[in-house]
Length: 113
Image 1 (cartoon, one colour):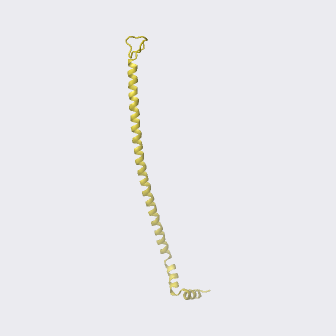
Image 2 (image 1 turned 90 degrees about the horizontal axis):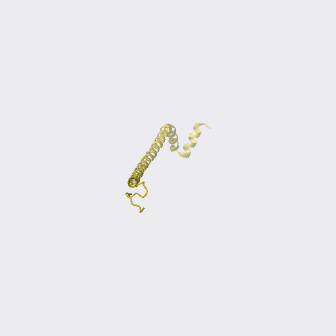
């Protein structure tokens, strides 16, 4: 088959539009591929941008939770430290007032001997 026969068959089947489409396809195939590639890059960029924003938001939320948890931990540690300090002071007072001599008349606190 020669190209004249193929062109005449295409011309009769699709008319002049088929020939225009074939010529347009071969003339603009590089441009069309560049346009399609640019559209794909744009859509990929938007997806990456949305993912980046989502991850930044998630990171901010985690940082806030971490700050809240560390504050809570520091408060409980301070409370425990103050309780231990009070208990330690009370034990020191008992040790300083305790008399080691048995049946001592000056014993503090008195124990009934």
